[in-house]
View (cartoon, rainbow, N blue to C red):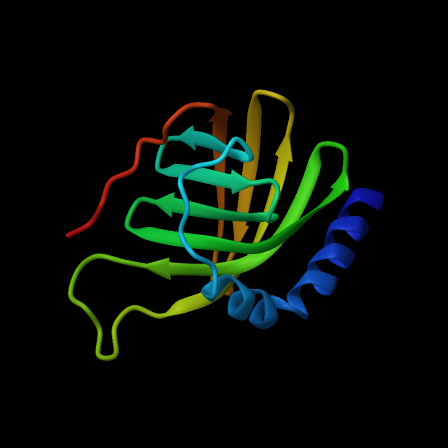
Length: 139
């Protein structure tokens, strides 16, 4: 129960600032991958975590996500807020829209259990450090 309260408190704190984080990130210049970036992969997902910037990019089957900021709640538990954008199929009027998302990662040095919380669903994934994800792109 204590862990749940810590996670909920951290998500509440982080959700207050995603717009600021998005504005700050939009001004960044793309650079080559750095040693601070770690790849985690699994079935239907690939995550690139930038430990220095405390951000992550997520590629799902038929979707993508961005973690705009994350924080460690405990040694093996991190939470973050960001966006999730569904892709594929007919492009809706105005294009695909990002929706708010919360990300909760429970990990050790080699494996991660990632929970993605959207307004209408919860998705769970198992990932392995240093492994590219098996991701299907939707036309």
